[in-house]
Image (cartoon, rainbow, N blue to C red; front, side):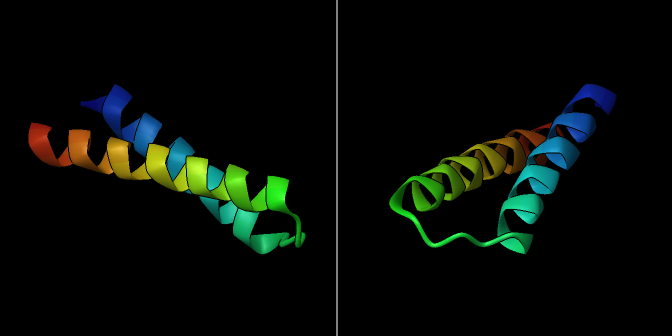
Length: 50
């Protein structure tokens, strides 16, 4: 469970960093979408474990 929580925290941190330094570009928007998908996946895994 600790590993899953660390993964969730890392994904949330990545999205938070991306949102705190917005740069308007297609590449940055795609990276943000990918990080959101990874965060959602981690949330689903964490929710299934609890």
